[in-house]
Image (cartoon, rainbow, N blue to C red; front, side):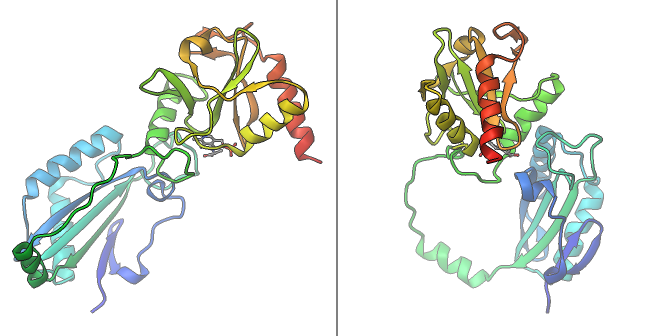
Amino acid sequence: MSRIAYVDGAYGPLSAAHVSVEDRGFQFGDAVYEVWAVRGGELLDAEGHFTRLRRSLGELRIAEPMGERALRIVLAETVRRNRVKDGIVYLQVSRGAARRDHAFPDPPVRPTIVVTARAADPRAAAARREKGVAVISAPDIRWGRCDIKTVNLLPNILAKEDAKQKGAFEVWLVNADGLVTEGSASNAWIVDASGRLRTAPKTMNILHGITRDALIRLAEERQIAVDERPFTLEEAYAAREAFLSSASNAALPIVAIDGRTIGEGRPGPLARTLSDAYFGASSD
Ligand code: PDD
């Protein structure tokens, strides 16, 4: 028997079920999920999971895709169509499909909803409970690997949306030590009060920007010293210049941070030199 999935209002074979490649769950991890245990065809702890689902959706400001009564019917129907007596039912709700942009789609789009169900082998579970299991330990780095260009971008998109709401183009992220790491979708740079070009070093805390590398190279070719050393927000406020870098923006001058004017409140000369050099260099 083919397994059955529910996707956006329709039941069909799991093997043919699909969502858009521009679904924000796929592109940004901009989605929530729940898993209910099914015992004897019934959901276990149903209310606890519904409460957490509402909370998760609320925290991400994703509209509830349907009321709880309707959702209970969809979950029960998916369990029934998959003939699951003991197993799990899985629900995923994403913000929906929209042209790729970190900030939320405006106007909002319809959330994507997917439900699947799967039987579990009750004997295997009983055997595991009987014997017990082993675990290993590992550092909790959820999510401390910003150097990997992964689509695990939920913190980035929430920060970017916040920036958009406040009329800003980008958001600079500040870590627990008070240091600016990078932007939500770009690397962060300043020309500090002593005239040195500064950007955070290539650690696990930042994405190792390709544009960042190119700008360092171009600066050094022009005898402009680059300090790969993090800076504080206070240093950024007091900077002569600030700019961000990314593939789509080259070196983009920043004229205000948190409402404070940077330098003279207009694009600085170093950002312009590097941006011109970058476009010149990349058209070679
Ligand atoms: N973002 N830091 C983050 C978190 C980024 O997402 C990006 C790029 C950069 C700059 O990297 P590069 O210079 O290689 O583009 C730094 C792209 C543009 C995006 O997500 O749309």
